[in-house]
Length: 383
Image (cartoon, rainbow, N blue to C red; front, side):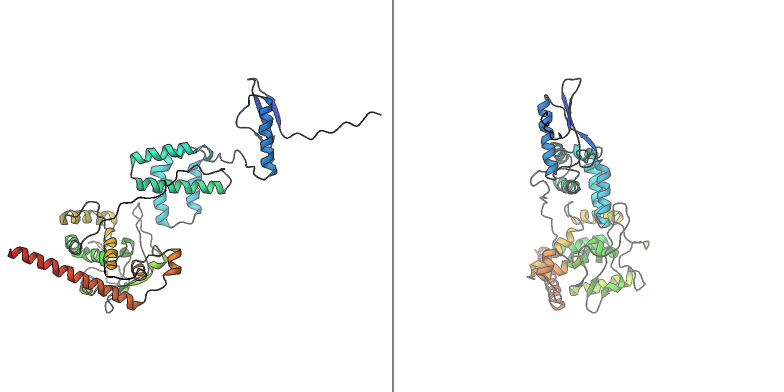
């Protein structure tokens, strides 16, 4: 009786010799679909070795569909924006970075066509074309999108691997002197005077100023209650909602010298309804960044302020002035409406008493600087 023939273990995949003389490897993956190696091989042994490595990946659950990354980057990035649940202002900012700096290079590529060398080349070209801060923001956005692709098993690894490329080295923002703040307020004219003063001495964000209403003001306490914000998108549309941070809902106690400014503005310029806006244009419409920006640039030039001094820098000026009064970090954070996850645990609530004291400190500091400036001008005239 003939001996039983030993059954060979079923081989994984197949190899075949092509007309070119090179060898091709093919296999059926865990997804039930037939796949082939992305390249051909010099010898049959090389092709079989490649199949052996694929089989090990499958046995260890490390296998991924080699065609998974064949997804258009632009479509994936736009879907990424939709699914993140981002604030309208963040979507507006990210859309701008994508449209101007990322999609022109990567928009037509598939995810798996974006490689570390192509990312390095893109970043180097962007640094030649625009500011380093914008490039850092664009790089962080690209890296975040591609990391999600890794998490979705569409990529093996993130091609954004440049150490420190997402860090911003922003220049120190300029501040104004107290006299310069008042000069800017005068140059902006009576209707916008209070906005300048509140931007500086109440450390308010532009979007918070845009949503201030009559019921936000307590003249007796000389305070403002911030509950809403209305940032303006690049298309000119305003999106009204909660302030930028959880700490943004707050009561700000103002220096006493602002009380007559508040009273005069309410009487002359604010909308008359109880919930009327504090700041509206000459024709009664909510102020727009474009129109206000033209007035701001003219005022800045008239006062002799540097061209890089933005309206937002008034807030930096106010925060610096508040810090100079000796206020503690907790009180400064509450006044500025700043928060973070860690800060929420460390810095709880600053009492109204401390905030009132901080406002009094700003009042005293501003009055002292104004008196010194007046005395210096008087001395110069007499000399």
